Length: 357
Image (cartoon, rainbow, N blue to C red; front, side, top):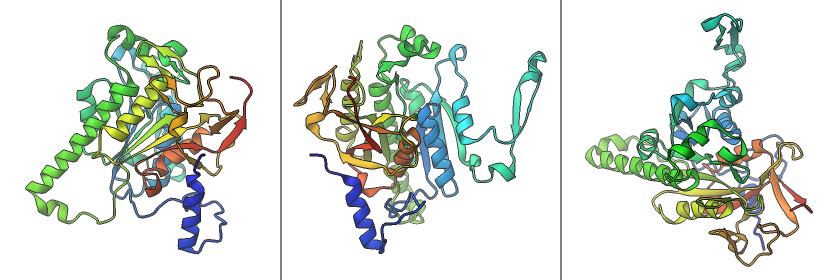
């Protein structure tokens, strides 16, 4: 049986704070306040994706005033295949200022430019945003972008739904990488490992500095920092399997989850198995529900254990879903939620009966 973590956390909060249960518009009341993002640097991987750009926006809008910096990492493989970062730019509001654009036939003057408008963009906290390009399968690049970060939200993926992006959208950047280095690895596994190793390296560097210069750490705040690694994954029932040269979709997701939980014990983590993203029929702004991930419903190395198989995935007749904006909010809140630290949970706002598998 699923254990509903969200209800337990809400009840405990209300008892401790004398809350009558009417939260109104205050969506952050359920989150533990013992952790802090004050003067912290948070790295968002996959920041130009649909979810990653919303995570970046939510971080800046809700915690930008206290954060030291939000580092938005976007995919890069080479000048010939670099994509634009319009989705991230739009989400964070970089285009809301005073803009100018030249005529399409005017050559270099056709470029658009935007100036900061304090009346419109005052709460956007764009001064705390730094954009970096990275190939996650390059351990040297990843080690560079993880230097001096305090927490990571990992939204990067090589998949669109359950199909590789190179196949699903014929994306030039991903096709180029697949052809140039067909045996180099996968973002879900090798990219994830590179990031965790980079974060561990940063933590080790800080400890060495503190040992050599103890006075430097004496002034640090006593308030605990955020959970160091939040992995955005996929509920096993969200998609059927898609066979790739490196393994099945669900098996790769579970392999990445186990890596975070078992292979890097020095890193505090939360693994969020998001319900199927549904921005058309699931409204945003709903209360986020959390349920413990049951191992008997988990796909391990492409094999579904102790579960019914229909179309290659677990099927209990219901499917958990979530609007991406609520998923982005949940990913950010996981940085501060003590109840989620060290756990793998399913995250959703809506449960729908489905007859099509």
